[in-house]
Length: 342
Image (cartoon, rainbow, N blue to C red; front, side, top):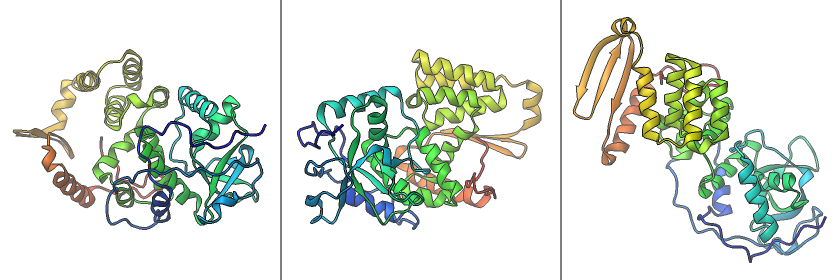
């Protein structure tokens, strides 16, 4: 099957997208400390190659730009083990397939030569389109830019930055991706610099790995309903009350459309039902403030405080310094972040 030519007649995407060169710059620095947070996203300017056949010959019109753009058969493209996105709903794949069928390919995907399989490629950005074409039999090949100077992990960071610019990540995607980076030896501090997410916020994402398998499967089915702070509350319920309660609550929240406040209140009610004898043994001191409370339970400290928006950045920095000083770094590379009691 000969794929339809890439066309510029398709409707422009709803969100501004990071330019390819900007994303490449960020990906190339994936193993280097960043001196700042996220940069403003420039206006996306799509590149439209001339129609070509399904061979892997570079498009001639791309030569002057210095980019290696080819029409690559999908069977030659494999997954990236560090992929920044793992959650692909059937609805998303169907919508993407319908768009490709109706409008053709709007922008190139990004790949690298496969490091272990000569003649094949590994995805950097565009796996949703590849999967949609395979599942729904839309195209046999896609126009792709081949990056010859990126490692698989750098390619994954390119994909991460592109997906963030399109607002296509959910917190579950981010949690899985960060765990892969921790497993490769990257620290929480390094990831915070690359993503612009504070170390305190990054610690919330670890809650997903603490969910019972049954609860995690429920989250996978409707991931947009479960931001990291909801996962953190469910992890507390699973640990302090029961795994069955956490799964039941997640199922109700996922399918019945209750508000986030309802979910947090339900978790709080369950957590407050601990036996009184246990509470007496734990609670040592309670420090109350006009905007929150600090409870000391033996050697454990629980803080619940509301910070004004204007003070958020200063608070996050101070909290990061405190956790870096007293938080105990886990020695195993898979964890890679301080294990805090959630």
